Length: 441
Image (cartoon, rainbow, N blue to C red; front, top):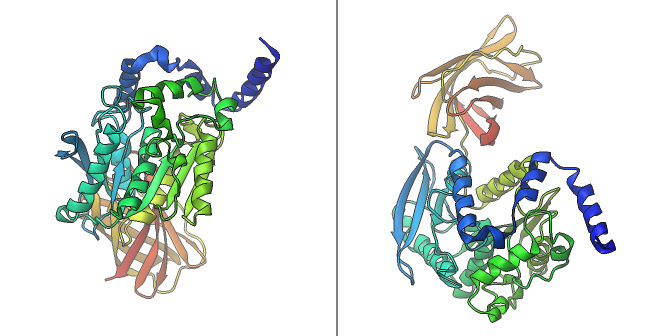
C-alpha cells in the first residue's frame, strides 16, 4: 500500500469506526456495480422493496399515462377516507442508479408512507430504464406524467396547482431537470423539488468524488458505470438535462430541499447546486446528513424522512388542520394528574382527528373529580373507548393512549382550552405529530 492509499484507509477507518457496525458492514459488502451488473442491481432493488412494510390506510390504483415513447405505467396513492381540502400531488421519480429501481411495487413502502403522513396524492411513474432506453427516454416519460397531473389532476379531485417533484439518486436528478423544464415551458407550476443524494453533474469532478472514491457505499467507478449506461454519447454529459449543474441559469426555478450524505461522492456537487439556487434568489434548504454515505444510515434515515415530510406538508399538504385518533381497542392511561386545570375544561368535546385510515370524529368528555381532571375518549366510528387520567401543567392538558393496530404505538395528546375551543397536537410515534382541533358540544 503506497503512502497515499495508507492515509486514505486510515481516514476511512476512523470515520467508519463512528457508525453502527451493521451499516458499516452493509456499505462494505456492496460489490462494484460493474461486477454486480444491471441484472443484479435490479434484483437488489426488487428485494429491498419486497422487504419493507407499507403504511396502511392508503389506496393504490394503476394507470397508464400517454407518453412520447408509449404508455407510462404509473401508480397513484390516495389516503383513505380523506374529506378535507383538495390535496396536492407529489410526483415521485424513483432512485436506482438510472438502470434499476423500477417496478410498481418497489417503492410502495415509501409512497404509502408519504401519502398517509403528509397527507398528499403520490404519483409514481415506472419510467423506462437504460441501457434498453437511454437518455432522454426515462426523463421524457416523467415529463409526460408531470404534465398529465397538471392537466388531469382537477378532474381527479386533486389540487393540480400544487405539484411537487422529487426522489433520490436518479429521481433527484430527474426532479431537478423537470423543475428546470417546467420553468422554461412556463408550466406546470412546481411548488417544491426534493433532491436527495442525487447526481447534479455527470462529469464527476467535484472534490468529494476523490475524497470518498471507495469504501463508503457508492464508488466513483460505480457512478461512472451507471452514467455510462444512461447516456447515449459522451457529449450528453454536457447536456443540462443530464447534468443540471451545467444549466446556464437556475433563476425562477421551484424552491428546493436538498439532502445528501456527509460521505457521499455526490455531496459537493449537490451543495454547489444549492449554492447556485441561493445566489439566484431561489428558496433552498440544504441538509448534509452526518456519518452517511450515498446509501441511508439507519441511525439518520428517519430524520431525512421527517425533513421530506415537513417540506411536502408545507408545499402541498392540506390547507387545513387534522390529527390522529385512536385506531384500536385501548387501555386506560396511568399518568397521575397534577397542576392547575385550565378554566372550564369540564364538559363534552368533539375532536376533529385524522388516523392513518382517514379522518374521524372523536368524542371527549372531561370532568373534575376530587380536584383532579379525568375523562373518557371514544371514537364511535371505529369502536374505541378509553378512560383517561390527565396531566395538567400551567393550563396545558395532556394524556396518552396505547394502541396496537395497525402498529403498536402510544398516542400522546397535548391541548389548550380557550373558551369553547380546544387546540393542540397529537404525537403518534412513526406517524409523527399533527394538529388537533376540538369544540365544546
